[in-house]
Amino acid sequence: MIDDSILTLDDISVEGKTVLLRVDINSPVDESKRIKDRTRILRCLPTIRELHAGKARLVILAHQADPIEYQNFTVLEEHARILSELLGTRVEYVDDVAGPFAIDKIRAMQPGDILLLDNVRVYTEETIIFEKEVKLPPEDQARTTVVRRLSPLADVYVCDAFAAVHRSQPTLVGFPELLPSAAGRLFEEELRVLSRVKQNPERPCLFILGGAKILDAFRMMRSALEDGSADKILTTGLVAQIMLKAKGVHLGRASEAYLEKKNLLEFVPAAEESLKNHAERIVCPEDLAVETAGQRKQLDVGALPDEQPIADIGERTIQRYCTLIAEAKTVFVNGPAGVYENPLFALGTRRIWEAVAASEAFSVLGGGDSIAAAKLFGLQEQISFISTAGGGLIRFLAGEKLAVVEALEKSAARFHGKVRPQDLTNR
Image 1 (tube, rainbow, N blue to C red):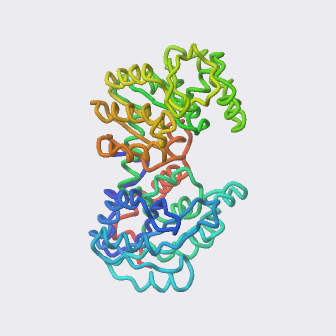
Image 2 (spheres, rainbow, N blue to C red):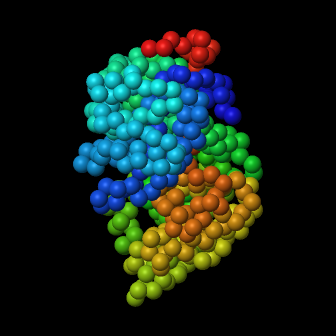
Image 3 (cartoon, rainbow, N blue to C red):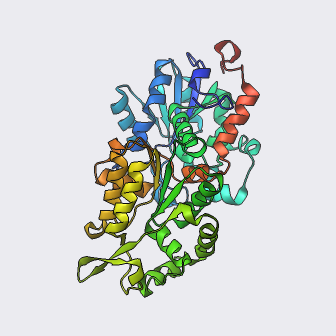
């Protein structure tokens, strides 16, 4: 359970009530824009099933495609078909979000009906550009089109979109201003698990940070070092290269040119500061791997610089990291160890993922590339918990406030005790 500052499905009764459910079923698509991975759809099923079993009139809101990639926006008709198949009951797709057609459909619903409205990001206020440039507070987002038109039709709002927990957008933070609001089961589980890693991990606790998203890694690293949630941080990928640069290691022309091109050298001062204050808790690679004549070549850090770009950690480092993982009680992983898509350089990521899967530690894995690697190696079922979140996970573990959590807390304080059937007014 999460604390009483947020309501959950245990705190509400929905029989005969109209429930607005915001989910994140934003799914990878192929070139023809057909869904190729159902993970996020699968993860929201427990909440949908519970609300459906509770005889709610269930109206689902969701988005598809990155909020700044207008050319990739797609309708949610296929999502409705997949949900119907997985649930074994009809999920009616409505080719509208908050217009007359959608409103009439909602008003005509019977208990047990499920509607999936169209992609909410057809509305400008649901895009990242609007969020970043206009910066409306939640009370003003409650007056935007979707919230203003749909909230009078509903009794309860439920948010299960933890992957969008950091977004301050109307369908995420506007409805809690006007309706009794609760977290769905996935949202509740994500918050509970990440709180365990952040606030009360079983020791020793390892953070394994790699990949190419340096800003994300350094956000988490700084917080984990300062608040003591991580006993050790194992660095891989570009994170490790930045840490080595901070130690004064010359990586080589190709690697450093790449870091410069991507504006990643600006993180070297932060790395130097972390090493200055927490050197004993930060573990860097002892050896690395590059490609030479089409073959994997390993070299000690002391043998740098090398003319070829660094593409993986070396076998001695892999063995050291695997030993530390075997001794850990909590392991958090974000970002692959190397260019895992290339068989020459999949070794570091695969071996570390296998060690995490085989360990007795409570393991949490997050980030799109991390999840993709786990699936590639067939290890996703052996990880204790795989987070659906990306940016939200990073910000939570970095100790930042999350817009949707704050909105649900505010709603709980305002509407506590008013979510019983006798206290709700049918609209």
